[in-house]
Image 1 (cartoon, rainbow, N blue to C red):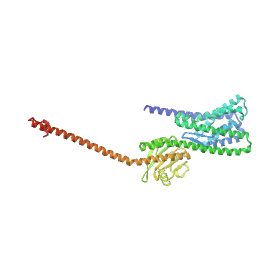
Image 2 (image 1 turned 30 degrees about the vertical axis):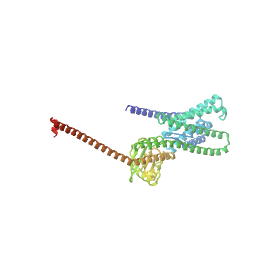
Image 3 (image 1 turned 90 degrees about the horizontal axis):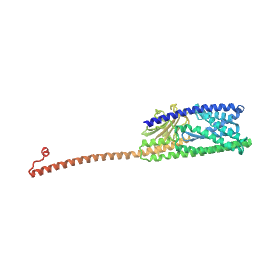
Image 4 (image 1 turned 45 degrees about the horizontal axis):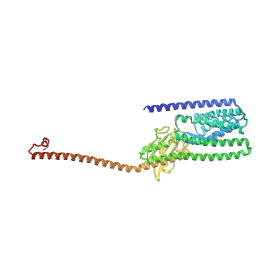
Amino acid sequence: MRDKSRQSDLDTAARLLVAEYSRWLRLSGSAFLVIALAVERSWAGQPLFVGVVAVMATCFRAFQFALGKYAYVSLAPVVALAGSLLMGPSITLLGVAVGTLFSDTILHRKTYTAAWSNAAREVVGLVPAYGIYAAVMSVSHVRSVLTLEAIPALSAFVLAYYVFYRFLFYFTLLARGKLTTDEQLFILRYEVVIFGVNMVAVAMVVLTIARLPLTTWPFMAAFSGFAAFMAKRILEEAIQAEQLTKIHAMESVITSNMSLQASLARLEGLAHRILDWRDYRIYETVGDEFVLLYRGTHGVAPGREIPAALEDLRSRVGADHSAVVIRDTSRDPRAIHVPATIQSLMVEPLWFGEEFLGTLELDHHKRRQFGRREVALVRACGRRIATAMHIARLREPLVDTVDSIGVQVRSLRTAAEALKNTAANMAESTRDISEALTGERTGQTAPEHYCRCY
């Protein structure tokens, strides 16, 4: 009881710390931006450059690489680093802030507070890093970026930016203890990979704009876009392959000697490390009806009332043999009766061969939570759940037989004990009779208990 109380106090303290950190981040980011715009006013005469940076920041933030549930990486640092080197800090800061706000609120459908926090993080990460870069350039008496003498300043700029920027991003996750050791190592590997990709992209952008003629820019842009697309697909496939290995760990749960409820609870715990949901439900088909077999204990709102409107979607999944994925319930006619608290929904059919066993349902209070990667992971989880359910159904006759045999064995044991008691009583009676007969032959009086009996 004391451990639970202490854990609750720690969780409360972590939530308060995260709330204060977010508030500090928004205020400090806004202050840094205002000071930077007031000190360096080149942005006022270059609105076109500010617009270009904002558009590029929006495009680069639109494509993100999810590293599990809580973390993601993107190519957005390319805009911040290259823009600062080519156009100066004030233009870049204003453009990145505007692009981040627009991308998060319009494209990613985040709240204004979350978008403000993300934009502030971009500003707070870039300002001190550029200050270090300017200081090293001043001490080294270097004027041009494209010289060998500028390498120390550029290295300090890049490393400082990544340290500040990623620390601000992961601080809340580390404070709340959301990442396990394996997840930290997994994220670190891909942070290093993305760091290398971003550095190559920054070098290409800076060299193209600074050294190559304007006529070559479209060709370089086309080549860079194709390279970025291929790198994105390769990284997404690699990340998904590593996450699928975590799902393969579910095989040991399926084949273990556990009850079905215990297996489903364990499978949910493993799935919750790589997927996010508001509610998690497993339904089993019993005749023509769907019966709730298991409801998850993880998530934002476990235990809330299940919408009755999902019954039609379950029937449709069974009839169409395909999953129902609704990324925005407010715009999908299939979810017209779904409550507004559910913004994303996925219903995955559970098939084992040709046998339809039920459905796996996940919903979320945010829009667009079930993309291509999430659908693939849910489908892989569904196959393991269907296997566990099928094995449980195969075990049921065996369990019934074992239980019946156990009942018969207990009955036989009871009968054997009764026979044993009867035989003991008969042996005692026989002994008493023998003693009585022996007494008569010797002229002695029969024992009192013999007289009482006869």
